[in-house]
Amino acid sequence: MSKRTDSPGLGSLASGALTAASMLVVTVFAAAVGVVIAREFGRSEETDGFFTSYGVFIVIALAAQAIRIALLPALARARDEGRLAGEIAGYAIALAAVAVPLVVLVELAADEIAGVLTGDGSAVAQDASAEALRWMVPAAAAYLFAGLAASGLAALDDYATAALGYAVGSAVGLLFILARVEPDGIIAVAWGMALNATVAVAIPAAGLVFRAARERMPAVAVRPSGPPLKERLARFAAAAALPIALQMLYVVCLPFAGRLGTGAVTSFGYAYLAAASLVTVTAFSLGLVTSVPLTRAGLGPARAALHVVSASWIALALIGAAAGVFALAGGDVIEAVLGDAYGGGVGEEVGRLVVVLSPWMIASVGVNVAFPLAFVDGRTRALPWIAALALAFQVPLAWSAAELLELDGLALALAVTTFLVLGALLRELGALVDATRGLATAAAVVAAITVGAFLPPALVLGSAAAALAGLGLYAVLVGALRPAGLRVSWGYLRALR
Image (cartoon, rainbow, N blue to C red; front, side, top):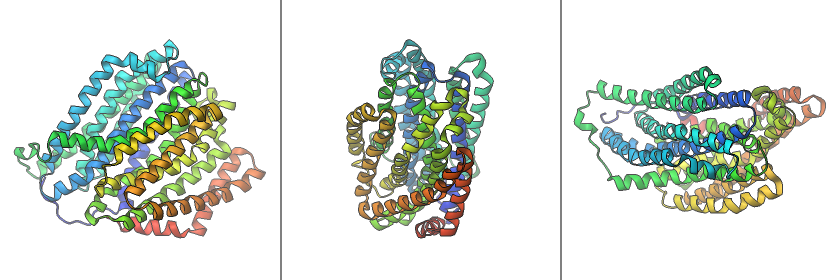
């Protein structure tokens, strides 16, 4: 893969829209899987056990996303220097050194790990957790390599191939689950996730091979080059430590949720899945696709603050609309999607939890946008320490919050710790004051528009009608008011390429 030639490429909004579309397909897959589980298996000890394993899957999958982000600056520089293939090969070997022992460990100790995850719950929950772990962990490990291939393509200004891989993998996995879940039970979901991951790796890897063949790249170019294995592993550790810790904040909550009764883990899991999906489709996509252009353009404290605030405006505007809908009709939406087992008080509980998770979504938007900048600017030394302190803080906070406010308390505990992580990241970037001021302004404006749009219909209409009317009014208000921060954000992201 030769040195790059200058080309206009896609703007960050276009690339972000493409990546967001693929993330949306992946999110729809996750949501569809959740619907299948809810309608086929209800809310039970088996679903509680499955969701504890799903939490582990998400931890590793987030590590894959983090490594994908962390490698983008290095691979972009490698492309400019004409050594991209060797750099990719070196990172592939380093990933194998991590993934293979992890998969072997889970295969050998799945029962013991399941016992810890379920809080030593029922045998049914532990068995479901252990069986799912044996498929979910290899699937998550495959995403490590999918992320590497996607980053290699991104360095070549190709976001479409990886997006296609994630989208096709999701579709194939879902079709498999729908075909096998009734005869094989809930384990078919884990099998489908493994198939999904396999396709997500295969398509971008094939894209890299095609690019190499088209450019007549010599075989010797694939020889690993660049930093030694130890240095690459250290870079992985720095990249993955914080995203893993952020997901572990949720995993830490699961044993406390498990002590609140059967179904509590499942309810908390569905609410968290809905909230996390909104963050992934919006903020994560923009954070990912802007890494390469920012690496080429350079970054300083002022630019970091502008970037964090601009990218967050777009994400928060979309999240505000979703929060308003869940606030008015969350129970109806949950019951309509997940089935009768989630009707009445259960659906209202899940819908309420999504709204209570709104502060966590605001903090997560900031983290998802700021995190890639640490690698663009080379400020990664403190990331493992931030991760360790966040986890240490979360354990007593989650325990006390669950004692006081049960599941709502756990949702608020997630928000508090994630805001602390965001503050630490912004401080490392030298953008704490300016970015905090900008994010607070954006959150306040979006919250005001949300209340102004959804409150009047709520006073005169039923829940579903009020949610629809509020959503329409929200779009009208955003279009009419055109907040200054949103206009600046739109212009900045369109110009970034």
